[in-house]
Image (cartoon, rainbow, N blue to C red):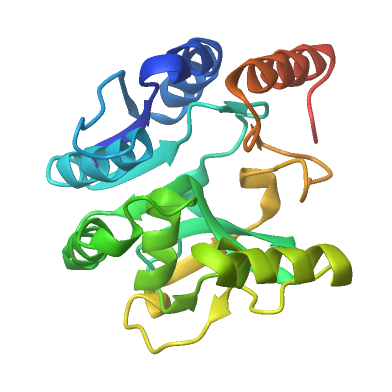
Length: 236
């Protein structure tokens, strides 16, 4: 099977990829992936959307593609993530628990080539109302899977009201959750958090640690700390 592991570090994210790339390279060599890294972004869209363009291109050439965000590092390379994708599913990713929500996160994904992936990524790309959404491509993928997006991220006064309510109540009044029928949702397998461990939803023994949601300089510090800790001992 032709398989690729890919990531993009465009602009200031190039520094993130410089830290994560050695862990990606070691993982790719160990499990038989072609490693494809890029610093290119589509100037017509925010940089996060380059992920979708790259995946669409690579899935035309490879039978299976693994994506890992540039601000994530592999800390335990012992297991091949592709082995987690059941034969009757075409997309695997983690969903994170916070604010009483379970939110799928596109920071780490496994995609099998075929009609499902083509259709899903086309739907994600063709979501002009979400191009500038705070969750970028992640918001568009959630919409394609039939999810309702959190009220606190809505534009204008409505979003402000939801954010104030979330601070006061400690929960989303309009949480992210499946709300609409979607043929794509049946093709998803949800991975354990060890494959995309984040600060707000940490795995006890992570395989990939994702340092997201902070300025680049903070992410760099967090990634260095994760790598230093991983060098001191191997997770189970």
